[in-house]
Amino acid sequence: RQACFFPFNEKFIPKTWDKEFDVIYCGLATGDHVTAIMNVIPQFDYRFVSFHGGGRVTNVSPTYLEKIDLISRSRITMVHNLTGSNTPQIKTRPFEAAFCKSLILCKRDEWNIIEEWFEPDKEFLYFSNETELRQIIIKVLTNYEDYHSIIDAAHDRAIHNYTTRHFIKTYLK
Image 1 (cartoon, rainbow, N blue to C red):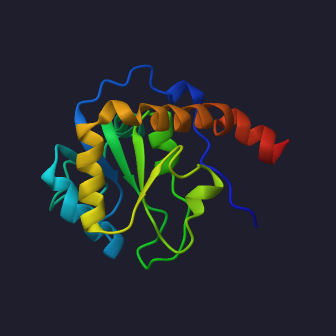
Image 2 (cartoon, rainbow, N blue to C red; image 1 turned 135 degrees about the vertical axis):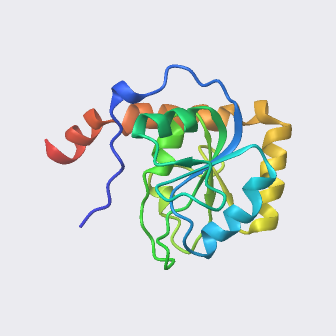
């Protein structure tokens, strides 16, 4: 078995990135790692996109393109690469954030499999706990322009490596 990236269809790459929201999380609210995220992001202008409504969910079951639009309108995308039981699983979220020019803010874990696809501090940032998460979000929002190089580096890596065309060339050719 070999892990592979989430192939992104080039026709879905946003053409504009007008930032309206501070932070977004897409997924289910299961696991302590997600509880930590959900304890912090409602303190900001946030979006929580999920298939299940209720609680702090702001957008229930959007289409894929609606979800991509929400990410492209968010300054920061919260990601993790863990299942609800804290085992590693590469998610689509870091790739979607990169294509949408949203800063990838990833939960650090014992595997850190995101590093197979993106470079820490160059293409994304880590957080370890709620306190650090809140501090990083405030710092990023206060100095957002200072993070454009990280956002652009992740976007460039995604554009040049993680589209469906690259998936076919890498894994199916």
